[in-house]
Picture (cartoon, rainbow, N blue to C red):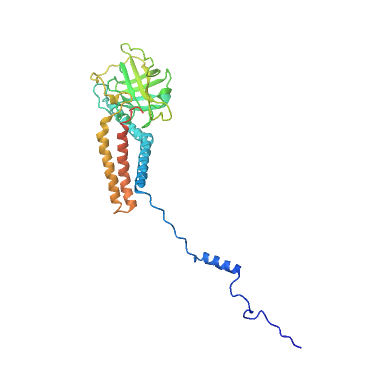
Length: 327
């Protein structure tokens, strides 16, 4: 007897077989679809726009923070570069005048004109001293108080210098000790002083001078607390006695100086100029915003940045004159 065998491997499927793919095959197919980018992305829900008032307040805070940061950068870093450049120019000018014997020796001297070279070897300091002690004069370096005699002459000569900003040439002044030497060169020659001591408000002043004696008083500021460098609380003085007899100078010195030229004085006469510069800065900002609509952004900033920086520099220098002249 012959038996009939059914070939289950033949084409077609046996009765009852399912046409759906197996679980593993389905997962593989879904993975392929995802990798191929078939699955649609989930919609991105837009964030609600901040209220107009909040946007304006945020922008204003950024602008104020930027201005404060620029001001600190200017008076503490960039201002030192400007003071150094001014010192080089003043030194060249005074050297020429000394060689030509036209350096000022007294009388009425124009504020801002170089009158002496001050050297303190102990501090490694050499600075050209200009005439005048207003805050604007001290942006260039130490200044000679106009109602005192010039260094080297018989009498008391006062020289003011900044402690922190614009190079802070007198920042180490309080470290001087009794006996340290100070050299001064003017149109009348070279003179040497010896430090008598450091004093502050309330301390006993130096002894009165006799005929022919000379004294140099260096003046700067100091403060207390975390922001002592930018918030001076008092003036500090270093007195030094001239070695030898002082010379005489021409008459015509002012009998006094305004409050803006005294220790820790502020110069409010700069306000009109400051307002003018700020108007120019505002006009420049508005102009940049208008130009951006017509020129590419890169071209706009190449043209605008030098103008904005120059105006901001002038505005900060003018605003610095409203601060105490010795900081």
